[in-house]
Amino acid sequence: MIRLFVAIDIPDSIKKRVEGMGGSIPRAHPVPKEQLHLTLKFIGDIESSKLRDIEEGLEEVVFHPFKLSLKGVGTFPPRGTPRVLWIGIEPQEELHLLRNKIEKTLFTRGIPKEKRKYAPHLTLARLKNSPVKRLHQFLAGNSLLQSPEFPVDRFSLYSSQLTPKGAIHTVLRTYFSG
Image 1 (spheres, rainbow, N blue to C red):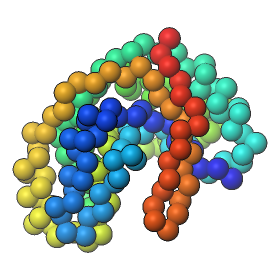
Image 2 (cartoon, rainbow, N blue to C red; image 1 turned 90 degrees about the vertical axis):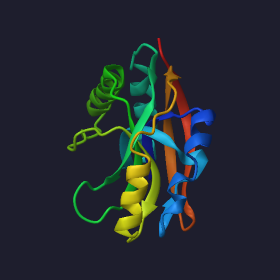
Image 3 (cartoon, helix red, strand yellow; image 1 turned 120 degrees about the vertical axis):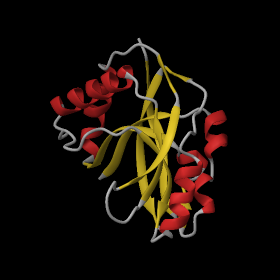
């Protein structure tokens, strides 16, 4: 079995700006800089024999380059105890079009469609019973956060190996705009 997801890598200049941001919150575990990415589709665990079919399917996804920027912060789930601290993405129609093309293509290859509404974000930190007051202070203090625009002209298929020290993400293949 191999665990897969499709994502857009974020430029190093943007990663450096947001790296460790959640570290000021007690019991928050910041995502390492090398793991910051914008997930387009979480595929999950599949048989290794399906990998080539998925790679070929993603070759069929045609898109034009576009620009994105990070905007605002929040937590998941929206109700109840927060478990994830994230940075949002400035809404872009092109991002949703790309994501929908990937979703449709992979569905024709036997990958189930995501049932939840797509909420584009970068996970900043995982939270373990972090103090609500500190979390609210962080959210209020960073509510106007916005990054410069950055170009998106590719996406990648990643494998994710879960280890006791956290996930190890490896780019298996990158797909460029046409």
